[in-house]
Length: 109
Image 1 (cartoon, rainbow, N blue to C red):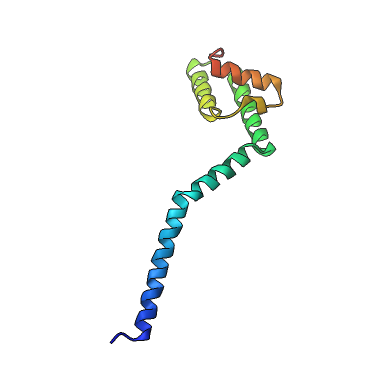
Image 2 (cartoon, rainbow, N blue to C red):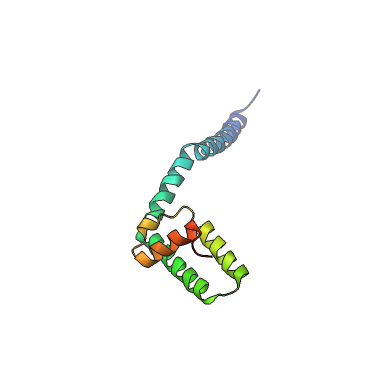
């Protein structure tokens, strides 16, 4: 006959694997929504916006000092990739805002 220790060990194993499955299921459903919400909150913080403005300002200076067309094209592509989902209206500096709009429109080559 099965003793109590064997039953307890089986229950513990079932709880461990069952808990892992539930945690995995949670991460695939509700966990994704929570992560997206937290990510969106971070993207609206002033620290994030200031960091993006600093990066864009650095890229603008780099673009102004470069005359090589290949390097300019690489910088423009990099700006388009990094700022593709960034709302330019969050920028306080109007010249940076216009620079980003011009890059996106292809006015700057």
